[in-house]
Length: 126
Image 1 (cartoon, rainbow, N blue to C red):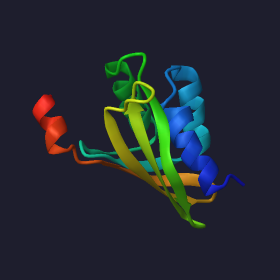
Image 2 (image 1 turned 45 degrees about the vertical axis):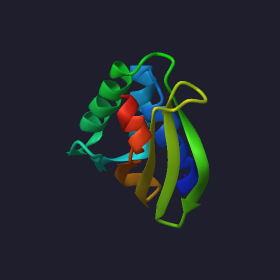
Image 3 (image 1 turned 60 degrees about the horizontal axis):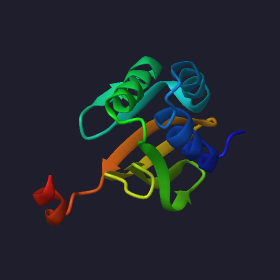
């Protein structure tokens, strides 16, 4: 059975960090339950197709040099996990966040993405 830590890796790198649509879809079907719920600051969506669309939209809007990198420790239990990440040019992420997953039967059933607040200095330079 897939571990929570392995699912955190697949979520970040094989799905949201993967610019190849076919391999991303295969990773989605391996990693998440068919009725997965994904919540981010924009919306909550349900299912493989909706999750695939969210990942594709994110990657299509980002410059090609943008990558997801893990930041800090992973936090895991038998049914939940959390992983902090940065997204942007290597060494200079423009967005930071944390993914929190709920796992059942070796697949992610719920994914919540929480974004870091921007500092006042960052907001003033935008």
